[in-house]
Image (cartoon, rainbow, N blue to C red; front, side, top):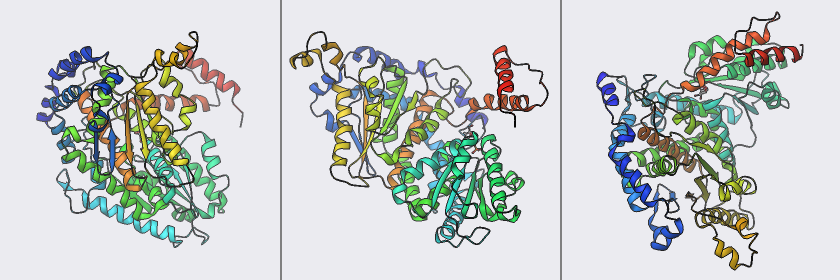
Length: 554
Ligand code: F6P
């Protein structure tokens, strides 16, 4: 980070001292009691005007508790926060991840070949395309059966071993794009260090037909390396201990060639990426190798195109029509002014069943921060808790709390006009439900309405829906690889905008370190044949002693 940049960051006006922050607070006090019913009654065109559409995505934001003035002030806050300059800095390759002194260039992963993006004076776009071409060649060989295992059989099973960003993106994309996948290949994903994850993933697989992709940016992550070593042992045991089998059954995706080599994987079978790709922003790098193997290079390139369309939309569209900016501003409004503590992401598309889990890392590892870029403690709430399930399943589980509980839970609904597996009336029923949920959350049902239906007085309060619960509705034609890319990039950039406004670093994750360090200290204490001298707190000491006493003696 240059000194100038550091000085700029230090001199940023604290968020709560920003002119438009104060204006938003005053505005909130003035409007906080206005119900969505009133907003819709006062402006019958609201449902048409408070929408935005671009690159095949439609956003209806009319059911947020906002007025034109709220949006004007939120955009003014974004401008006052220097959002335009921050967007330019990210796309230019400035080292905006200041605590790790790194550029943040996931947008380069989907940049067309003709673009130039410089990191330390070097154009990185040709490197990106060189890896994509190697991935394509490998995918073609494996999918066609030309890549053979050690005994000469083609590969039928692909097991991705990775965790966090090296797992959640690949799993989510595999599930999301299953419709487009080659059903002759089996895909499994192993992430947890719990041995059950590995055991169940391989229990019905033939090692001679199995390829492991060890996916790890650092190639040092405890869970991934433990699973990779177990995979190696399982494979060698199944193939008579022939070490030369590793070259046919293991490939690596990493930034760390030295560690890949040390593990025993030939670096000719390694697909690289770079330190300017954060783990949770890496599913469209070589970390997406399992995705490409599943859906083929053409669909993978279509996914990248979708990401790129959203990048360009984000970079060039005025804030008032900019989908990621709008999504971020409503998130800030709900979080910092309305006091919402969570966001529910509710895709009405079964193929997106792992999308909320993927978004949890993207949002919360990025913006779960309590100090600003200059190290000052924040005096406002940063990232809310993201969670969700596909509809309609969630309706029969936790929606009760969203409708009638005491907490405000803004919802992002995602739906498609067309089903990928149309059968009878299913899709109309599905979409009727998502529209109905958003309607019920916004408008609810008053006591008068309930009573007018003949509900007895004693029961009436239980049947009242307060309404006034905000939601976004995101619609697209159907779930294609390109639309998936757009949706992911929509949230990536929304996370970025929120981070800029909160003045935090969305691209480091120091918060995961302490637990990792402490686990490394505890492992030998659990394994030691003699009683270790424990120096933790009394609770941790007691838990360790108890575990040692009761653990299965192997
Ligand atoms: O523990 C957090 C984390 O560092 C994530 O940010 C990352 O996606 C994950 O671990 C896996 O890391 P790696 O790809 O280096 O194995």
